[in-house]
Image 1 (cartoon, rainbow, N blue to C red):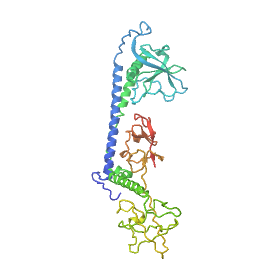
Image 2 (tube, rainbow, N blue to C red):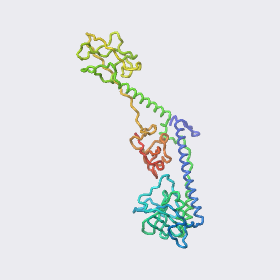
Image 3 (tube, one colour):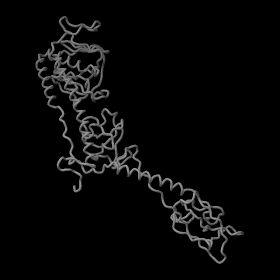
Image 4 (cartoon, one colour):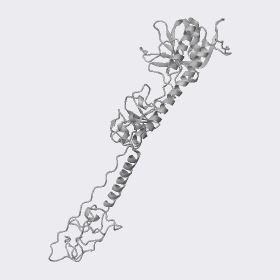
Length: 444
């Protein structure tokens, strides 16, 4: 673009391009640090799982009050005091994990877990893992799953839920444990199952592959933004211009409100509306005055002895005729502190006298549209109403507080309960971890 302050040698810029580059680089840095922190957390958890799986299994100390007998040579692996028994009631298991000989760490979503549709809790109690079977001691009795009965164990990625898939056609059941105990419970259950079916080495290979695969998913350092990448829409984001427009709009609204209240007051000495003595005319129609604020005797008077019909008066021949001024356009006269009163003048017997009509009052200035709590922005985005925003402007996060994954969505713009804005159409909920969705954001 001709005249843009972009230096071709070093790629630096000033003005709106420089402001966009600064905001964009800060956004890229924040997104990269968040992604890198999550990647490191999962890498550390995968490595700890692999290290524990390589260690030889140590039998757990038998619980003193274990409410069930074990076989003579059966080894107690772990006891989980708090567990829930779930059953899959849906005919189709879309969205549920498939059996896989691995241990999947549970994602920390920051919100209470909610079971998927078609999965319900049927009992609760204590879960016992041995080298031969999984046992649940519940309120309605004892249930057990010998490992040779199972086709595999499936761990949910986002919920502390492990499903037990039987051989053949049977109802899928599972065990849900508290989030803090999920990693240890999954590892011990999967190791015991793999040992029983002779797949321990295969499990170690899968865990090693998971560590290597995750290592290759390390987030890349984003390239710095350049002035040439600045979109044309960012040119409108000038803080000085936006602030000046906001001040002008506020001044126009204040002037309109004061002007409207001044014109809404009745003025003493207005011309009478024929027929009834003492009935004033429209209070919004003031009497004319001179530009210097001197009252002009143009108000009609009632002659002494009249029957009630007003007799129009005329200006005194010795006074100056009204000139153009603030009073001539219906504006309040700045030269006076309140409404003026014109003393009655004696009528001229030879003059029929036609009173001049009073000028009409001008309408007040328009009041700026309300955004219903939305921050000031040059695009008139608001929380009141309008059309949904499917393609927000590139610098929208300069005016609205956006979630870190704002640009990952492909739907429309929404407001979260914690005051941040997001886009629908992401893999998870648009306001996940932000209190849920509050309402849509509109383009008026």
